[in-house]
Image 1: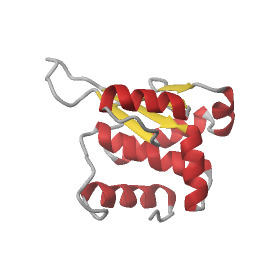
Image 2: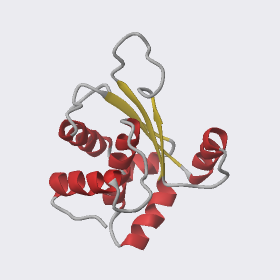
Image 3: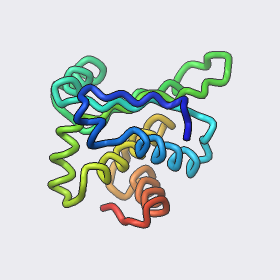
Length: 151
């Protein structure tokens, strides 16, 4: 288990419902699958109001969302090898509702969002259609790591 991951919870209930050891184990498995085991990142679990503020400040969108990613490896070359991928921010109440709508539990949705966020940190972006490269890679990795199929 990596100690370099920074896992933050804005509410103690989030930590109870999304245990840190499970988050770290999932991040480890995703990074290993992507051949990025020597990299690290932070994951922040917050509420809908805070993610709306972040979304507005950094993306100019005044609405809630499930996950935001802030890459530290895109763009300028720092002149050294940067092993910090960046930050993944997840709105827990939004994610809970989304999980219910999709018919699965909270941690299943959290795993998918962490995977989605990590791919963004690595430079993948949404495709024009749902069957684009990023979407196919998400489904493939999720299936290989869990044995479950996501739609």
